[in-house]
Image 1 (cartoon, rainbow, N blue to C red):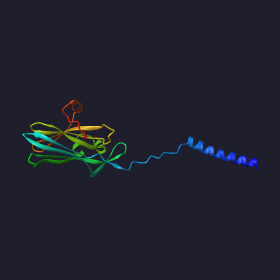
Image 2: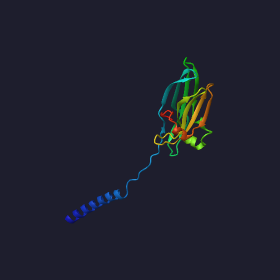
Image 3: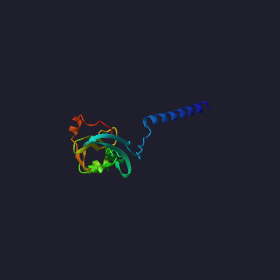
Image 4: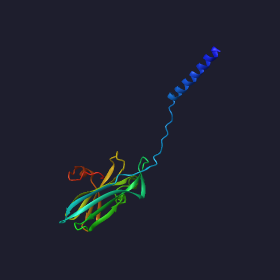
Amino acid sequence: MAILLTASTFVACEKEKKQTVNNIIVPPREEKVPDTLIHQMNEIDHTDEVKWVGSTYRVRVHRFTSDSLSVATDGNGKRYYNNLIRVHITRADGSVFFDKEFSKKMFEGFVDEKYLKENLILGMVYNGNDNDHLYFLGSVGCPDILTEEYVPFNVAINRNGEVRVEKANLEAVENDSTLVDNEGV
């Protein structure tokens, strides 16, 4: 009886030991769970009082997410709602001079189709004026805050409310000390 009890104790210990050894040798398999969320960037709303052509103008730039636009998927498979940028400019008497929503489509001719599909319009900020134009700096790029990938654009609005867009020279943007340092560009 003593031999049987010792043998069963030995077998029970051996079984437990094998399970522990197996767990150490073969770790549990990790399953990657796909990201099913559709992410969005923070809303930004900024207003500037601007002296231009002898009067004061109020320039409001508002970035917001639009779920009515297509969803962008970045190179890592992460999905984002697209943004819209609304530029609303009023005269000193409160009348509207300019009111337009910009999407990343306005930059179609400046970046390739794949880049535009995988990225968002990130922002736009007021960047000065001259006698004929109000200037803005805008950008299209990766919405991931850990990435600094973007393409900058100069946007000019003339006295008639017409818009001109051109790709910004990145070196000139980095060296120009008059640019506004603001989130959302």
